[in-house]
Amino acid sequence: MHQQLSLVGFVASGNKGLARLKMDCGRILSTFPMPPRFIAKQLSRPSGLFAPIISWLMNRHNAKLNAFALDQLRLTRADRVLEIGFGGGLNLPFLIERAAFTAGLDRSPEIVKRANARFRDQIRAGRAEFREGHIEHIPFETGSFTRVCTVNTVYFWSSLDAGCAEIRRVLTPEGAAIIGFLPKTHMDKMKMPGDIFTSRTEDEVIAALRRNGFANAQITRPTPQTAWAVAVASA
Image (tube, rainbow, N blue to C red; front, side, top):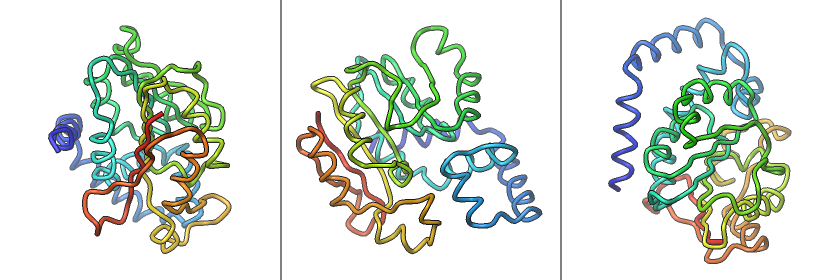
């Protein structure tokens, strides 16, 4: 719980213009209504004029899930952590502050460019690195990380097995993976385009982790009533 409170502090301290941004986003979205398919594509890979807006909306909507997922990492100062699909960068200050090294992987070149500019000092110090790519081919060496975290990305994986296998590959033998997502029973209610979003059940995610060499894979959530879920597994 202490880490979740710390994340809230990071969000508050890093967004002094949050009220203005919220107002501006509301004006833009009311002026330029976005069809569901456009929103789905932007959630999958933010780009163009709306990339900053989508990133902000993702940060705001996913704050509680992200905070709970980060808490499951149990980070130490010695950890090397990879966040896959870091999007708006909500988790990055928290990870960089607490881990020895933080890497980020995202499908969107614009998102990666923004992270490189935002964290240029940490990159120069050798404490952070951000790359464009896909989970099916993670562009990092085998055994590079002690922790891997990804939130709300499983819907865009071409294969759960391919994604879990790559996460296992880049983890050290004592590493751990954290996967946060909205299970199929709730995701299907959102009626996202099926060719962009693939809903996943909790059992499917856990089974893929186990098939690809993860031990003690299990689902956790803060309360039984919480819609979203976090899969925790050790390598």
